[in-house]
Image (cartoon, rainbow, N blue to C red; front, top):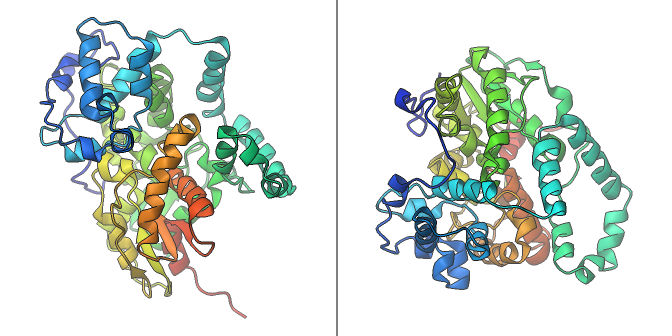
Length: 446
């Protein structure tokens, strides 16, 4: 197993196992907040709105009131729901408040105590319970999206300005990902040999939507790992990681998905379990918390999380293959929130970019400020998401980069929408791994 100071294998407190567990903010976490206010400027919603109840401190105050017996009402739901869960406040907090855990626990408590309307209830049940865990349904949805885009209908819709007439719905259309044929699901169950001498044996977590909309990124990830001496296994039994479920407070389904992934990956004898999505990685590394009260899976969940590595984290921890072609471009880097604040990984992506010959790296101002993607936040709170994105694009403009690199597919979608709306047509958004893949692939022979 490749060591990582960001992901230690800790001993589980066996006294917790089989104790009754309720998903809600726990007093020990709430009590760590001293209400100093150092989190305020780190919070995207507070910076935009200036409303105390839409700051981490204000939200924790509201959680404490609910814990003291106040009922969960619509106002509380709105303030909790408007949080991006970017966890920038965790980085700013001198008291070590586990805000990410608190906001997820609060949403789980809200989910348990909220009766939603028929349409919302069934839409959420379909999205979280059926679509995201199902390769068949994701493939069908991806095929429809591909037809919409490949037929030219999307270009016509955008050319005639229809999205502008649809208001918020039109803004959501601008955030649609591309459907990338062929989908990555076809690689499930395969083993890709290392190029040259094998140094590691790793398993790759392919995600859910990423199999449809980031199939080429997944393929690039496999190639870069192969180029660095890794045999790469794509376990056929893997499923959605459950990150979107956890962020939405739907813990029961998230736990089922976590158990399936643990069964699919843990006994494979891998040196590492690799993900190229920072949002997924943050949840995968927290399976130990998610299943802490599960007698059968608590210890195994910690073992799984201890093996999990973001692909940039893994590559930066080994001796990187230096045989690369030059990538002659000016590149800046946007920190994914769940990589920088959730997993505390900042240096690894920058280290990899600086290792690419010909590449000129320029640091972006406020690189770790949220871009507004936050899972499906940009679809649920599109107006706020775009306001946050506009500020991010202003930071991008200051560095005059040809490529904006990041380490999370959700951020890539958001930044691409920002480039279309506010950026230059020559600016490209890419995953760090895609840039490495370009450097490792030989030029076409003529």
